[in-house]
Length: 145
Image 1 (cartoon, one colour):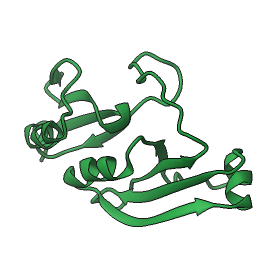
Image 2 (cartoon, helix red, strand yellow; image 1 turned 90 degrees about the vertical axis):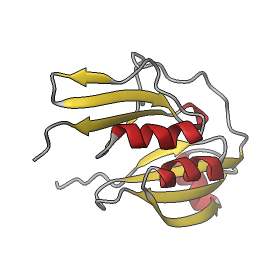
Image 3 (tube, one colour; image 1 turned 180 degrees about the vertical axis):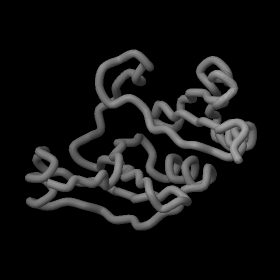
């Protein structure tokens, strides 16, 4: 049976704020919609499911994020995920210039959790806390041919 990853879905507090963050990093909005109805209740497993959604795509066309802001039922605030917690962890992006990407993130109030690391002179990478507490990893390959 062939299988293909379609997207990673992330519930967010503020859809517009999150779209702005990811589009500033270089993703593009493929589409937006508002979903509700019996089909949405059944698919997601929530009665009265009603959400605003946006699908964003990476510049290489290979990765997609589906962001959703719940209108009903009310979104449930949780503590931000820590790097060592079990479950949905982070979304990772490779970038050509990590310093430029971090400048963009900083404009959105998003800073590295600790700093930028050098992994065996192969990658510079960092985790940062994005909108709605999303863990985002940015990595720049060093000595890229």
